[in-house]
Length: 69
Image: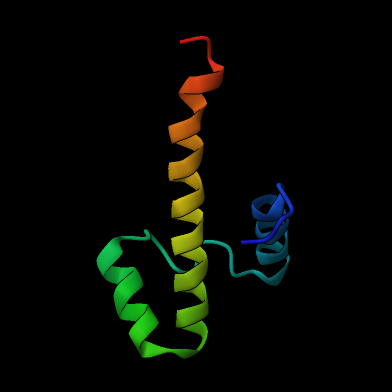
């Protein structure tokens, strides 16, 4: 992942401009693993999906610390 805290927003804007937003579908673990094995454009989408899932998990994990709980 990039050091840019807004990397996900920039990537989403870029995908929207290219028309590839949502082209990977629901990012399940099995689907990500299969796409990584296939290679090519699907591998790039799978790596992005895995990074997005990791970022979301981290954000959920840390959100409780700042909510006053």
